[in-house]
Every structure is written in structure tokens, then in C-alpha cells.
Length: 259
Image (cartoon, rainbow, N blue to C red; front, side):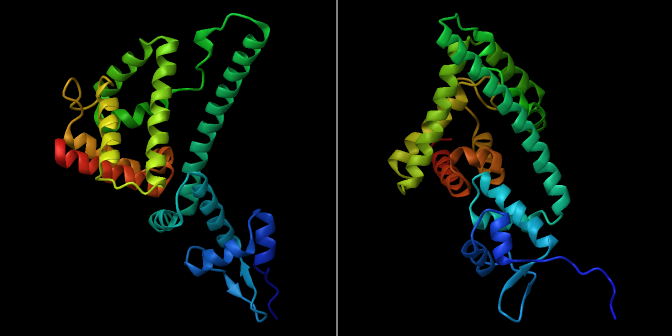
């Protein structure tokens, strides 16, 4: 008789309740091969073990980043070491938690000042809106000089100038998402106008490789377009994987015509 400890597993209904999802969603994940059950009982019910729960957690984390299911499947296949992938994601979540906490405190201070008729403290209004979080990555990709020039440019701006710049970037991202959702042709006139705005936005940032009056180089522009697709942190700015692919395709068409 086997006296070993039985591996725990959960029914599809239990997992749906625990994960705050639905049995229908879990069945769909099974149908597309994203999350097959660990076993199927004699009653036809699906059951899931610890490994399946870890995979479901990763799926939900990636969905929160805006990735579509095909892109999630690619990420899971590419990063088979679940513990390592989760550690990286945890580090990113902690950074986001810290940044959001500072943003919340910053906005609360602004609201308090507005309610009390007090003078706004510009130097405190943008805590948590931190461009330096990508310092090491920028230096690794494009060199220390590129980061140093961009950093000096940003620090030289007034609070109003920084706010205007952030609004411009946010509006550009929103316009990309809206164009994709309407099914705009990436090579068409509207998408190419957006690609021109993307090019001009990059041109205005000192330190952009190949930048200056002529704007970013073809190599940099195309490399950045591919990075939007490859890195979910950036793709989330454009509505997820499909949106990032739309931006990449439009930027590629622009580069082929103009760079």
C-alpha cells in the first residue's frame, strides 16, 4: 500500500473560485493549449496541480501587462523556468509598487494644496514619475552618453515643461491605440502620420542615437519598433501585443519610405 503523500490537486470549479476567474475561461485555456489540466477524472472534470497553478499565475500576470493569449503562450514557452521568470516579474512589481506609492503621495499632496488654497510645490509634484528607472537598460543598449544627454535634458526642464511632455507622450500612445482598435492600415496615411509624430518625438530627445536635427537613425528607429513588441513593459503602452505589433508595422513602413 502506498503511504506517500498524495499530490494535491484542485477541480476546475475550485481553481475558478480561487483565481477569481471562470470555468469557461479555464476550459478555453485548455482548448488553445495554454493551460491543460493535470488530469481529467472519470467524471470528466478537469483537475490542476501545483505546477498548473503556477502557470495560471504567470498567465494572469502577463495578461495584466496587456499581452494577448498568443503572446502569453510564446512567453511561457520561451521562459520555461517558472521560478526565475516569477522572480524577475516580482522585482518589476516591487519597483512598480514603489513608484505608484510615490505617485499616490504626490497626487495627494497636490489635492491637499488645491483644497487648502496653498501654493503648489512643483518640486514635489512629479515624485514617482521617474525616468531613471531604465538607466541601466538605456546605457546597455545605447551607451552611457545617450542616457547622460537625455537625463541632463530632462532635469533642465521646468515642472510645466515636464508635464507638457508627459501629456504629449500619453496622447501619442492613446492615438496609436485608437488607430489600432479602428483597424487602421499600418502603411496608410493615418498610421504614417502617427509614425511621423513618433519620429519627431524621438528627435526632440537629446541622446537619441542618430538624433539631432535629422532625427533618429533608421537602425535605431527599427530597433525600437521591434523592442515595443519584444518587451511587454513597452508593449503595454500601446494596448498590448497586438497594438505593439501595429506600431512596429507602421514604424517599419515609415522607415522604409523615409529613412
